[in-house]
Length: 351
Image (cartoon, rainbow, N blue to C red):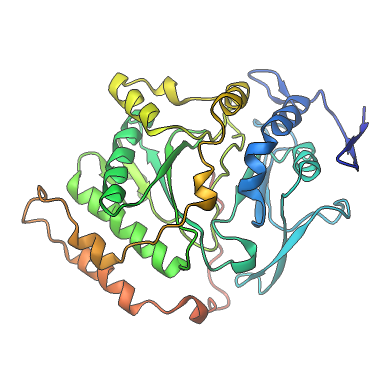
């Protein structure tokens, strides 16, 4: 049965509220909407002004899903959209932009369980406001091993006087964000993230990999640097995840990361929707500085020059030298080349 509700002077029709979207727990669409209403003060500032990719699960987390970039044609006329030129499609895409509660509730009613915003604001889509590292454990490794890698990353950034902020992926791993909010481009952030992932791999070859090949990831943590790309998105802070339980990508403190590592307890960093709301009400938004904190990214040469003293002298790989040179060779953001026509289509991958 449909329900008509009014939120901030906007009328919405909500449908199938009792439909179970998380069968293992009985979490319904009504519960999904309720969660996003309660977490709205925290999540909306992180979505506002950004092109949003929706990951929709109309038949629940056990059913088929699809990504939706272009805003649906049947959207209410008050739903804001932002135009973004797509080089791959050679046309302008109109993404949903979430800046108010009615839009967030409308998305929840579409069973858009997962929200994936761009790392850049739509008004300057080539300028990411942050850099992100997705720490993905290869079984039997889990988020505990990700905590160790995350702390190594924090140490490196502290060396440069930069703050970083951890959050759970809401799935298996941990994600580390470095707010920038200063002029930059993906031509700077992506090579930097790649070089840093390689340096971690060389310093800790038994625990870290920077290559996505699954056969080399067993028991190690992939430092996924490739998310720093104009054409990719990372799950939003406070977004639900389409897991067996309604887990959430939740901000955590570095003290919580250290505690999980010390106790070797992955459950300390698993947060479902009700707990995430309670944390926000008690602790506020631990991720708020990611929106406002201004930091300048070091150069690749500064990164490679700041290698830890304990690194064995023999480890001076040519690939890091090549990565460092990329800074001088990369074209400016305004000189990005369009991909050739007829190129291979990207495979959809679960996140």
